[in-house]
Length: 369
Image 1 (cartoon, rainbow, N blue to C red):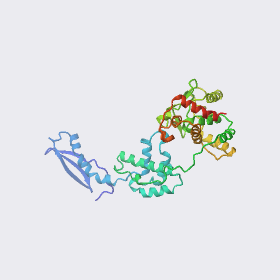
Image 2: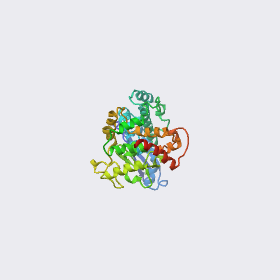
Image 3: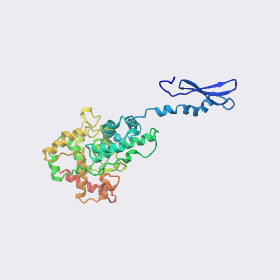
Image 4: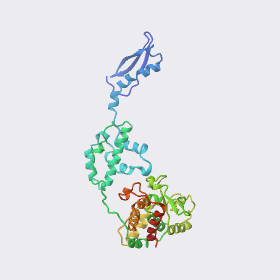
């Protein structure tokens, strides 16, 4: 009688001492089967005979392996996030957990049709760039599955998926004029919110860089600051976006004066303390800049009669004001700490520190009046 469930079998290796021959035995459809491995002279120990029986063991378990339920996309995606995803910024966690896994998580990789993925992506009420991120995250799951042997090495099915206008910006870059900045900052009076916002615009920092500043990052004697870490979704990373992002930035005397004034007010003013330390965590963590945007930046913009904006507006404004002041593109690239000048504009150039300092000084005078 056939067994209700076929299981993986290791089989049995035994020696017939009458003829000094090793046999491999296993059960198939309820009956014991036997195969000759070799003689005792060929395999003087049982361990050697067991190793010689491996082809037989693999053969009898082939059907069991083929019938094994394939892993789901969700299981593989979570394994990828745990074992392979880059630590900085959590990689594509958001796109996988909130979009790809809820939609495709129960299916195996073989069951996911690229055409259906493309139609699904088109239906999402997200910007083309966001849809491209979701596709890229799914592609990485397939790549990981190939790497660990879960999925056959072949052309990645996600390469067949197309996302229209993936590189096209759907929202206009928000840049403040000097008059708009003056109106806006007049409604920011609390600290450290005012100093944090002014610092962000004076240096053109990314939000995650501003958030993770410590007093030890500043050299007030030399008038420089070096960005050494980032904070994303309340997670601290001892890395920055690119190698270029680690470059030291010049500090204007006006900005140094402003920062030192805040340091004098703050109860968390040691070199190891966060610049924007939160009193609610006894200085163990910085203030939440998302909350600062919601509670201070947006309300101030509304009061100033401006369309609401976020932290990245200050970085766009910094670059625009550098350009308005006639700063060479090479110096703009270095002050923005772009890895490639094509990110700033499609020309090359390098800046010496005095030129960077002079260009930065012009913008700071526009910010701090």
